Amino acid sequence: MANNLCVRFVKAAVGAIDASHFAVTTEAIPSAEMGDIVVQNAFVSLDPYQRRQMMPNVAYANPLNLGDVMVGRAIGQVVESKHADFKVGDWALGHFGWQRYTKIKVSGAEKINLDGFSASTYLGALGSPGVTAWVGLHAIAKAVPTDTVVISAATGAVGSVAAALARSIGCRVVGIAGGPAKCQHAVEKLGYSVCVDYRDPNFKQLLAQATPQGIDVDFENVGGAIFDC
Ligand SMILES: NC(=O)c1ccc[n+]([C@@H]2O[C@H](COP(=O)([O-])OP(=O)(O)OC[C@H]3O[C@@H](n4cnc5c(N)ncnc54)[C@H](OP(=O)(O)O)[C@@H]3O)[C@@H](O)[C@H]2O)c1
View 1 (cartoon, rainbow, N blue to C red):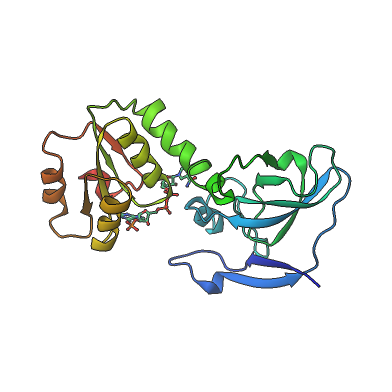
View 2: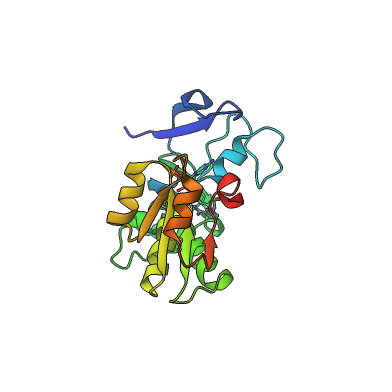
């Protein structure tokens, strides 16, 4: 018989995160009550914000308590419904956490018509990272085709979509990523004109060489030393 596989948060994050911060538990699959659905999760998103919810004494939305199921956006299919808005088999998106099955009020779930895209796309390019990239590039930076756009964390969830959007309107797109392999991936697969390795001791000089006309838009995903230079 199927069980619910859950990943629970068991140790506050100080320094690097490893397996000791989590416990994998096998639990009963929850049952829906009136107004609930139960979703069988297909994909879960791992995002930078989750670390803040694992840190002690950090004021951030809904901090985790020890023993909680790890937070995270997920998409899956409804396996039980006690609300007229969802039927079994519908795709649902929400903060369902790191678990195989989630019971949730329908107010916490968004019904998704996959519309020919894979379900995971709704956690990526068509989800929060994609919206973040679009808002940053178009609503905030107001990029135009003649711009040179520099994007840090170039191969990440937000950076890779920002690069595609910038390139689609004709911008020259310069990436910043960690290591030669990621820089190669950025140029060969993600459409960057050039990508600079921030771990290279000559990073500052290489960035200047990669942007001979200057930088019109700095799509800053990291901050700190990269932003300062
Ligand atoms: N994902 C979302 O839905 C979302 C929504 C709103 C805001 N944001 C924000 O957008 C930014 C990017 O998010 P993301 O989801 O795209 O992240 P991500 O895919 O997890 O990418 C993180 C990357 O950031 C780079 N990085 C981390 N620490 C670094 C350091 N000290 N110096 C240089 N590079 C460093 C690393 O790049 P390398 O591997 O190349 O070293 C790392 O792989 C974050 O600030 C996040 O808080 C994200």
